[in-house]
Length: 639
Image 1: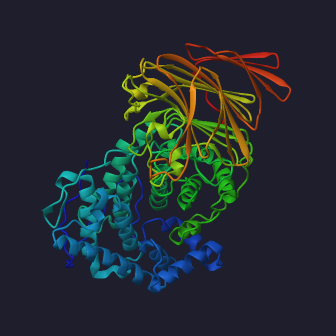
Image 2 (image 1 turned 90 degrees about the vertical axis):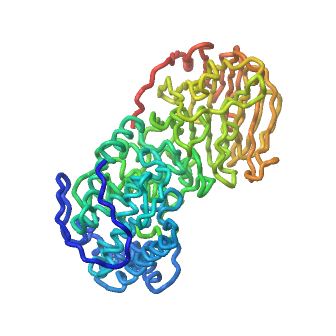
Image 3 (image 1 turned 135 degrees about the vertical axis):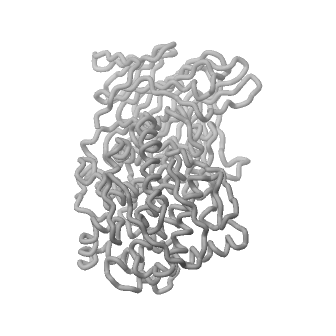
């Protein structure tokens, strides 16, 4: 890695001769403002002059901040943006004062022998803090004056420390740190590191000796780490951190947008991951358009309700691909969602920046099933209306600290949750254990519940889409690190309201197998039949085989982290077993057992027979006199 020259933080201003940049490839503007505005100034000025609703709201919020109001989380760069667009000096005066306070506070901490705030939590906020400094430096360049030396020395040292944790220092005092995620493009910290690096490089190239090197570092990180990792590991878009921490990718998409507008280089098209994330986001949003699939940790809001961050995630993707056929469909989702505009004042700027000519169309016409191999997330729905049935199955890599032990888990939604991830009812949003999810749990002969191991991967081994059905099978045994000889989950989804689930399990003798489903309300048990009521619907879970004892676990019982939630548990002895269940919404079918691997479903005057191979992946679907054999192999799903 190429490294920038070290600077010692000093608040005393000292003039240094600027050297011109020596870069190739992207075109870097020489004059301030360099970042974003070269491509967008005219459009944004026109919006302010036209007093569009987005422009008016943003300006009113910024005016209150400039006047001294405490606007939560409002960054100085937003005032600097208005300073550039309006030419009114008050905006830059306030923005420069805020950044200088950050630098002065850092100097005071360093003088005490402490690391400054920018280094807290493994430099997580370096992108926010140093990025703020860089944008204000660029957009309010004429107002920074003799503060520039102290600003740039502080920013340079912070970015150096990020990428060089073992030699990190402040004012010559060694302050090494762990280096968490500096080589992991799948971790949300990485995007903060990139933000500080890119923005400092763009804002200051040619300003001081060595500053141009941050442009090299940024490009090197993309070329050698991020793009190769995304291409190899994130096919289908999304994040292995799940949908909670994964929304941090909005910051990465914003960097693509800023870079393109500043240099002319379209980074977003360098990897198919970016565009694929549009489709992944659409399918991960439940039909009522008010929440995202609750996958992985959700520490900010455990309920996975749509928020400004999700809106911005989609906005950035639309801005990157305005001419793509998916853009107006994603715009339609936002327009009809529970967040049609930003709810938080500090996020209102993005409604202003991303007010585009992309007119919303409709979600109708999109394929109703989606699979992302890189995350293992599979989504299917009965249609694109808000009352559609929605199904999720997870079977893929388990590699990130914010991911859950949810391989093989099922979720069902229809006007509300019928089967879900229990993280929704937790205070922390961090319940990762297998027992918080709807999968087949396993205990050892000693009674210990087996955990899914990080660094492993489940695998979808069959995926087929036909008229009115979806077939998927997953090999889940690898996530148990060799402790489970066989664990396969195979599902046939019959639209709109029937899900047939078959599990092949060979587990330690002396232990137990526990077929589980996490639910927001307590199931009602009646022999092999259970009912879950929610959202005005009834989910019936009918166990066809094997014999098992059913019980209900309350998550809140004896666990202060949970506010509610329940788990249907069906327990049988370990060994070599086959489990066959029919999940039916609103009594969609009468179920007749043919044998331990076959059921007959009477639905709307039609009889459908579903048979599963007992020992290997494969199913047979018989309906309307036609027989469809469903074997191994993963088909491409139509977009």
